[in-house]
Length: 331
Image (cartoon, rainbow, N blue to C red; front, top):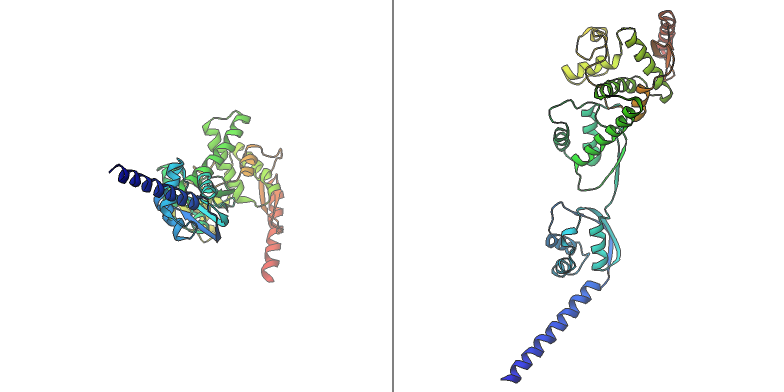
């Protein structure tokens, strides 16, 4: 009886040794993986991840990988994302890739001057995700409050799976950082910051030339000091968008007379909100206008503007622009 027990123990021990050797071999064995991308979903268990890897022929045994990740105390540290896998890999190397989150990185560039709704559509298109996800993310960040001008146009890096709220929060925080720096430099309070943001949004929409930003800013500051109506066309267009829906861009005389809270022809002072998302340079230009006495500007036919300090100078610039425009229309 004792011999039988001893033989049984030896058999079990031998089987355990063979099994341990097999598992060790499977863990350490290197597999040549063909170049491919694999996405680890948010919230996926180590067992599910193991089966995904086996389905893609990145590992040979899902149970062994799941067991190894648990025994090495790494199962809860596997990070979601889109990974590029290739070359000779064993399970420790693969586990290192997945726990360090060595995911593929993508970039999206948000141009200056987009309205927030345009920005969300661009993000949805560039990341190939539902627009509603971005709308939900916006609401999660700003609630039912004002949403315009709160996101800094810039190039942002992201990974997959897409986390829309995280990306928008990064853009929100980037804008807040720029404004916090300006507030510290200028000794501003919250109302000053908001006022500058509104001015910066007008600067952003009025000129595409970096050198002109401080001149447009000066014209805005100077007109406000003199209690003159700003009479900035982009504020008219934005007001029509907010009150009537999208605008086709062909501004007419009757549009200038259509009163909305944003129309700076029918209302003196600044609009109640920004009219787009201004970039960092426009925020700084609004805070630091050029030391000039400009009150007026009009297109000059070269992509820039002709600036003037007096109405007589401005009228001459307008006449010159009309001549240029007529010549362009003839061709």
